[in-house]
Length: 375
Image 1 (cartoon, rainbow, N blue to C red):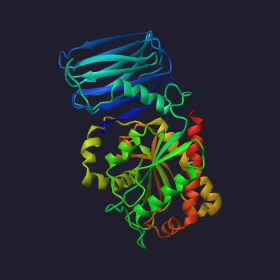
Image 2: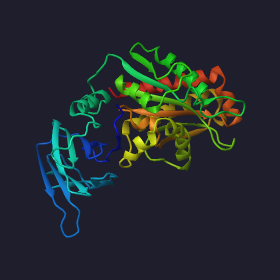
Image 3: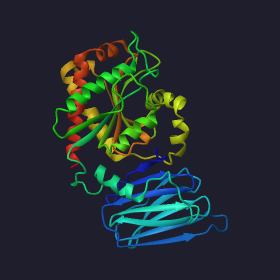
Image 4: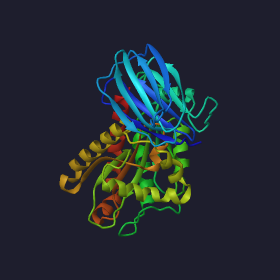
C-alpha cells in the first residue's frame, strides 16, 4: 500500500525538530518530534462562531520555543497549523475548515501524534499506524540516533525508467533508461565494497516499474536510503551539468521543468499525479533528504572537477522539486540527474565507463559518509 503522503516542515527552533503530515480523506495525522520531553498535554476545541472557523488547540507543557511558526495545509478539514510559544510550553493551533475532533497519542516523552478527523468514529486505513510511525522514527534516526535497526545500512537504488518508458533520448540515441541502469549497477558495486552495506535494486534489467512499485520496494525493505538515478534532458542542447534533488516544491523554474519531465510517465501509467500530488498538503523540506542531496552533490562535483577540470564539470547544485518517486518513500530519498543527454558533450561523457565509474564511486562514498554521520 502506498500512503497518501505528506509534507514535512522542519523548524528553525531547536525544540521542534520535525513535523510530518499524513493526509487521508477524512483525517489528518500529524507526527511531532521534539527535542525536549512533554510534561502534560491539553486539548481544547473551539466551535466556529460569528463567521470565524472552528479551531483546535493542543497545549504541550514543558518544551519552549522562541517565536511563532505556521504553514498552510491543503485539506478538507485543516487550513493552517501554527506553533506558538505559551507561558509554560508550546501551543499548536489547527485552523479548521469545518467542525472536527482532535485526539493526541503520546508515543514517547518527546514524540506525539495528533489526529484531526471528522468525528470520533472516523478510521482511515490509508494512514500509517501508530506502531508503524514509531518504528519509522527509529529507522531514520530521528529520535534514537544511536540505535541501529539493522547491522547493515540498507540502500535501495532505483534506476529510472525502463521497458517502454525509455526516458530522454540523446543526440546520438543514448537512452536515459540505459544510462540509469548502468550507473545504478556501478553504484551498487561500489556500495557493496563496504561490509556493512546491503544493496537492493528496484530493477536490474530493462523492465518497466510504476512509481508505486518502486516506492513499495523501498518501504517494504525498510531501507535507510533511497537513491533514484536519472539522466537529464532539456528542450535545447545548451543546458548541461549535474544536479541532485530532494522532495519539496520546486526550488526554481528549471527544477519544475525537470520534475515535470520525469513525472510524465507516472501520470500516464499509474495515476500517481492524482494519487499523490493531490494530497500533498503543504510546502516544507525533508531535512534528512535535503542534507543527503547536498552531501552527494558536493562530493560528486568535487571529485569530478578534480579529475576532469572545473571547466568541464558544471555544478547545478542541490535542488528540490515534486518528484513523485520521492513523495511516498519513508526514508531519506534523493533523485540524482547525472548529466544532460540532450547536450552533446554531457552525453559523450555519460557513455564512457570512466565517467560512469567516477560518478558511482563518488556517490557511494558521499552517501556512506553521510550515513555514518547519522549514527
